[in-house]
Amino acid sequence: MFARFFRIAGLCLLPISTVMAAAGDGAAVPPAASEEAAVLRLSDAVDAALQDNPGLAAMRARAAAAAAVPEQAAVLPDPRLQLNAVNLPLDTFSLSQEGMTQLQVAVVQALPFPGKLSLRERAAEFDSAAAHDEVGEMRLQLERDVRSLWWRLYFLDRALEILQRNRQLLRQLVEVAQTKYRVGQGLQQDVLLAQLELSRLHDQEIVLLGSRRGEEARLNALLNRPADLPVRLPGMTPVVLAEPVDEPRLQAQALRNRPLLAARQNAIEAARTRLDLARKDRSPDFSLGARYGRRVGDNPDGSSRADFASVMFSMTMPIFTSRRQDSAIEQRGSQLQQQRYKLDEARQRVGREVSRALADYRAAREQARLLETGILPQARQTVASMLAAYQVDKVDFLNVVRVQVMLFNYETRYWRAVSAANQAQAALQAAVGSSSAIDFQSSRPESEVPHE
Image (cartoon, rainbow, N blue to C red):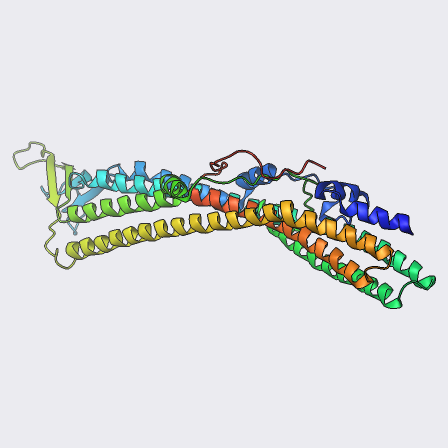
């Protein structure tokens, strides 16, 4: 019996990574972590999402469609071909009866006022650039969501492993309590209390497994995979929680690199170009054409009738400018102002995202450091001391179970903080507009858990 106590106490003094590895053989493996499922590393998940996500593919197709518009906008309207039968006599429909009867063929080309085509092309180019920037923005958001879901799953896996390890320890405590009760050195309430804690752990396991299935389905949806496809994550991943650079540098980086701001700026340029085009609409458009008329029959003097040739020129007459062109200019001016407001709102939004993500990252990082370097070692020592005292009846069973539950909660909080820090780092990367790792003041990891 005493050997079992020392075994429990010694296990509680080991580091987290060592204890998890030691308990790995009997750990409860969630259904999604079956051996048949391939290990999904974080980089592989991001690559799969960027390649296969249907929403991102739709945005790329939209950008490709927008890229084909500028070339079309720069081309003159198609010329019009006209075929006419002119001045046919209704009594005979003869082509030779009347001298003015003609069979005509004409070509007419519309000519917009100089500068209109180039303005339309520029507006389409800005629209295309904005669509391309929106693809970049969606890439950032998609990568952020994938990283966040991956780290949530990673936390749930660690929580399930810790839960199973604590279940094993409680089962050993139940055996000890039952042994002491049988020999008259313990109380039946100790056995019931330990069994109650085991049932509570089972209840927590049900909740964790349900949460994992939900996060698994969400991740599969982003990767364009079946919702029920198992997702198996690596057993252990190095934990690197370094200090990022100061916030002003991150804010400046976001203003330079964020695709959302570039898209808003291109939308402003497109709206400004359309405003210039609306002003150009006060000027007339032109049409230029040539017509050939063929006549049949002879003149009174016996000579053949000559064919006709015509040159045509026409222009629009913008005489309703106060009701049409001026209203269009006012409309385009309001749309330009709208885009400027959207850019201001986007800048404020980006600034908020950077500040919030950085604050969340620093808070989670500090919590993880405190738990790893201060609270967890003290909690393990407390558990070991309580177990040693319990074996000589200096501590009641309730306090032993209480400190064991406390250690379980602190270990779970540690991995929750690690997960939250990595999720905040993913949000910070998206906020500053970079899919690669952001700059840190030091590349030294705060804590590193070796691969299992």
